[in-house]
Image (cartoon, rainbow, N blue to C red; front, side, top):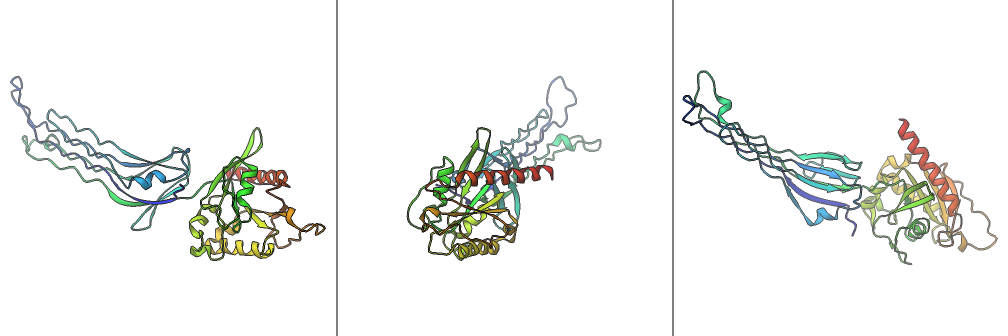
Length: 334
C-alpha cells in the first residue's frame, strides 16, 4: 500500500524538576544547599531514511512521545535528559503544522534530521539559588512542559522523470518495458492507482529514476479522478515525459493540451519544467499514415514509440538521460 499523507500527534518530553537538598555529613561542619537541576525533556525528531518509499508506518502509529527528563538529586546531581523520539520518513516528505498550515520542514535528503517538537527545559535545584544573603535557599523550579502539536506529513516523490498522461496512455507498460518496475497493466482506466518508481538503465554506469503518475483527467487539479493527490508528485521531478496515445479516442493534440492545462491550473511552476513528448502505440496506426504531425509541442522534442512492441525506446531513454544529466549539471553549478 502506498501512503502519501498522514496526520499524527507529537509530544516532546517534560523537563525534570530541580531538587531541594542540603548536604548533611559528619565531616562537613558547614553543610549547604546541594540540590541538582532537572534534566531536559527529550525532543521529537524526524529523520529521513533513503530506503523508505511510503508513509505507511505513520498510518499505524498516530502518536509519538519523547521521554521526560529525570528530576535533580542531592549532592548536586543533575537529572538525566529524556530520550528522544525518532520518526522515520522517506526523502521528499513535507512537514506542516496541521492547525496553522505552516511548513516546518521539507525533507529532501537521506539522513536529514529536523526537530519538530522541543523538549522542555529542566528545573533548577536550590544549589543555583545560593547567595551570600541566602545561604540556605529552599527554592527550586519545576521542569517546563515539552512542545505538543499535530503534524501533517505529505510525501512528494523525488524522481528524475515524471510520466504524465491520460488514463490508458500506456505509462505502466512503458515503465515496465524500460525498467524492472513491477507495474499492473490492465485494459481499464486507472490501472495505476498509486505512483510507481522504476530505475531505467542506460549502460553499466548510467541510469535514471522514472515515476509513473496515475492517469490525469480533466478536472484533476480540483481533485477529480485520482487528481490532486498525485499532481503533487510531479512537482519533484526534474523533467516531464508526456505520453500521448497516438491511436486513442482523443486526438493527440487535444490530449496534450488537456494535460498541459491541468498541470498549469495546479501550479504555474510546472509550466517551466522541461518536457519531452512521446507518441505511443504507433504500431496500432494504419499503415502508410507516415510520421505523425505534432507542431504544437511547446518546443519539446517529440518521439514516436510503441511501449508494448519496444519500438523507439532506446532513442527515447537516451534522450531522457541526456536531459536529466544536463539538469543535474546546472543544479550543481548554481
